[in-house]
Amino acid sequence: MTTDQPEVSGAEIALENVTKRYPGQKAAAVDGLTLTIPAGEIVMFVGPSGCGKTTSLKMINRLIEPSSGTIRIGGQDVRQQGENELRRQVGYVIQGGSLFPHMTVAKNIALVPKLLGWDADRIEQRVVDLLDLVGLDPAKYRGRYPRELSGGQQQRVGVARGLAADPPVILMDEPFGAVDPITRQRLQDELLSIQRELRKTIVCVTHDIDEAIKLGDRILILREGAEVAQYDTPENVLAAPADDFVSDFVGSGSTLKQLSLARVSSIELADRPTAWVGESTGEVVARAEAEGHDAVVVLDDRGRPLGWPWLRQLRGHDRVPSYDAEKLNTLDSRATLNDALDTMLTSSHGAAVVTGDRDQYLGVISFEAVTDHMRQLEREAAAHGE
Ligand SMILES: Nc1ncnc2c1ncn2[C@@H]1O[C@H](COP(=O)(O)OP(=O)(O)OP(=O)(O)O)[C@@H](O)[C@H]1O
Image (cartoon, rainbow, N blue to C red):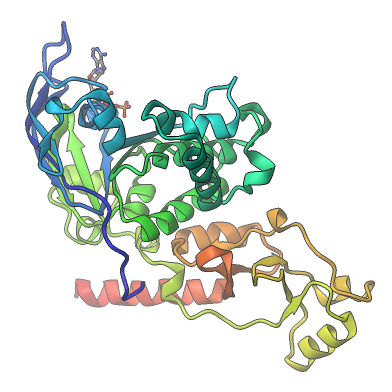
């Protein structure tokens, strides 16, 4: 949490009595949906399959035309906006990134700016800035083709492409559905970190209630026909579900769900000895042993953790070697305690290295710290129930 919140660059979205009736369908897919999405917030759409989430989302940028009703972005009716104006207003990110396979990463990202007639220098600068923002080294990745990227990297490029024209509104449809759980968690953390900088209005459809709790400033829970069952903050949805449908859907009340609400940043991190690449191993080992530790966190010259070797692994070297950061499963301080447990399961330390903005090392979170927190939650829940 910071006190100096950056300016909101997002715009409010207002849906007023919006209906979509597909040809040949008896019931409307979306039946009179009225909803205001505040500028600069992330709103997550959830609900059972077929309830109208995607239809509602796609009407915002007119990928699907409403049968009736009005949608306004920043007070402006989307029906009165031309194609280019909508492109400027709304970025779109879907599962797997949906990159064009015959175009390089740079060309994929440059797509909308090009359509909008930006000059080449501005596009070039934008591509570099965006790759940096989504954590891909521009020099390494800009010329690659999508097939030369991992699923997570493709998704990062998809996010960069959605942000390319710097639109106030970003629509995301199951953006992280196609990647493994650890990568998904990282992408979610990155999105939160990007959002803290940019403060867009983000509307995101997901099947994953934990993802909704983690990412959403608010969650919209829909029943069939896009009828609003509850529209509230994750805390309120969990603490006071509107009815049985909502409580069944979110599985509220369980300690595990509460762990999706709590962030790593809410727990005090433990200090661990650190070492820089190239330092004398003898000095590092002596320092760590003096503090009673048997491992050190190795940092690069920008303070980013690269590895977490045991002292016995260092002893074979004169100088602290470099490590491949890809192999260290770090946790962003914005990650949930649920994520933390997942990450620790893959670590031989029974703990995880935590990073903050720009991947800077912050400290270590231990398994005990999380289980202590869980016990605390259980005690509070029990006291509440009495
Ligand atoms: N092009 C279409 N033509 C006819 N019916 C459609 C069309 N697209 C969606 N529907 C129907 O409209 C309803 C809402 O679909 P929509 O895709 O918006 O739901 P959803 O909540 O996103 O579902 P899911 O979670 O399964 O993706 C469903 O009953 C679906 O079958």
